Length: 564
Image 1 (tube, rainbow, N blue to C red):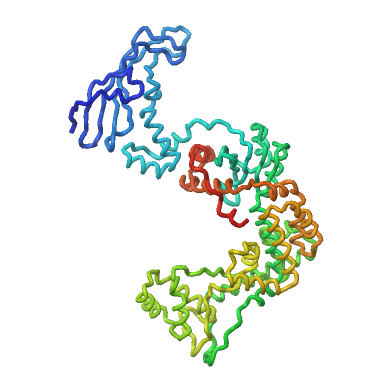
Image 2 (image 1 turned 45 degrees about the vertical axis):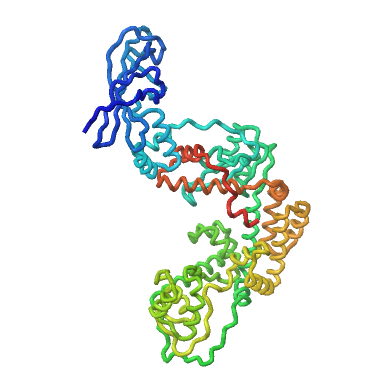
């Protein structure tokens, strides 16, 4: 139902109101839509090409245009405009339409201010979520329209930062990557590059002269691109990546001594009072049979890698021949013993304070999941049954019991399965943590690990000396440390020191100046969030528009910088 209503002159609320006259106002109660009929009162009709005013009117017609809503009421404009003849003989436009640039763009079906509001929604939320919000705000549109508005946004003005942060991000992890450039002083991204090649970065730096400091990770492509594009700029190696490279080297030191570490860190086995052995051997399940077959296949690959290595084959040739990744080849060759696969143990945080009670009841002989679940619910447990059952399954595995089978007779006192010894990777990062964050259990593990082998003691000491240099900016001790690492008999740390030598200027700057890539990593994290919002439609141009046009508050440093 339509009603004619009397309102104030709404042209006062529209851009270009001096050239508009309100004719009528209608309100559609069914669709909650307010329609204003307006007429243009411009004195002249200039041709959009030659700007010559028209002397003859061709015709009149009405444009239907959507405008910003009033509260939850949609607003529609019926704009009556004219068409004119161009009197210039050589002008290619013979007939043209009257333009109102302050109100609406040519051929547009929405006012300029409505398009601006929808564009902001598209930049912030993307297509699908932006469509939902636009509908709730009484300015509905499709996701294609939102993304098109974002695509047609004006490009941000070129900016040349004094301090530039450079890092990569994945379009498709492991396959295609791009580069994000961040102004570290303003703490905002300034450009995206479609790849991470040295030539692309060098060309961008040549097009934007004036960069004085470039903070980057240890990637060789970025180092070369910075040298080519800004040879006078100071390159700074990110401190977190230095620590990460150190951790990788320390893991290489630990891996050949995996058995020594396992023996040193294994908790003493408690002696049960009376252990009743099962009357019949436990049958092997199909899952255990499949697991054994997979282990045999991995063992065969491990032996094949070492056979080819002893024959003089290169790592790349072995990888191509056996169809394995080069990192796998490197891992096998750094391990003197076959690296056993370790199933990750996940701590059941949902059990919380109930874990001690579960272990107490388990050690008392109650091993039935349903019984324990009922007791926990009576104690206030609000987690899912599967969380408890998975925890009990891990306890059974610790005793070598098949799933859902009770231990015969009296069993040994068990511990929380999540407190198993750390892996070489976990141990490496444990030694690189700040001392004031270590627990008593961590310190005990570290002490026993250092005593497992003399190589581990020397490797840990070198690693901790280096991390002290990085954290406390002891740049004057860097050369001495490099000499010690180069003379060490630990190959992974010698290789790490050699890589630092090749990038010496950037490493020296990294442990001297305060600039780092933490802000850049934070912007990469934000970029990933924006990319996922596009649900696979994140073309490079669209992603670039969203990343560069969203202006959040200064992004805090990424969490990984806390590892310094």
